[in-house]
Length: 211
Image (cartoon, rainbow, N blue to C red; front, side):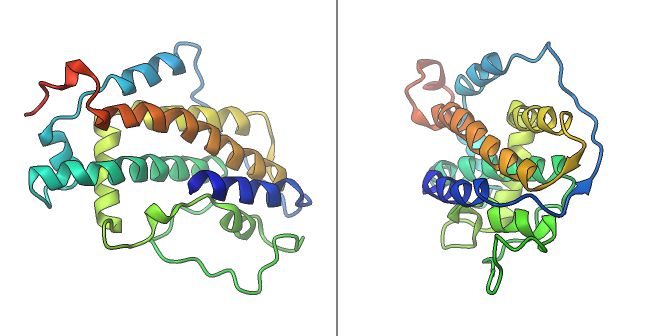
């Protein structure tokens, strides 16, 4: 679903005209010592025990349910981290509380739209980040904090990728936002498969990780 949503948004964003630049400057943490492929491999080899899944779920459920929720909380946490880093790199407002967006009477081709509004229209937020019967905002907030503690490379990959783009441009305009949204999709396509390995149960090293 997220992939289809990204393709739809990017088709719109690519044809949008640049407008409403917001001049900013950002520092970068890019370093040649960071090996993204090696970090992705480490993520894929991470073993989550039942206790890890309990903490990921905020100790709100028994072990078996905590592990089941992990299948939703892990991608939701990854997505949240990526959106947070993208907004920071673009010098936009922090990720707002969960709510179903309402874009009535807004036209993405309207050149008078502020860059924040333009970004809001394009933000690739999936259905995971809308209150539902399975997940809610406090649960995902907790899962995001736990991922930062347990798998910090996730945030670092997003941050480094976004800062590389920002360090090469002096302002935030529609072209920059479009580029960032595409880059978000690229990062997700690399990180999600690695994170999936945490819950796959196929890693023999993780079969004994039960406590």
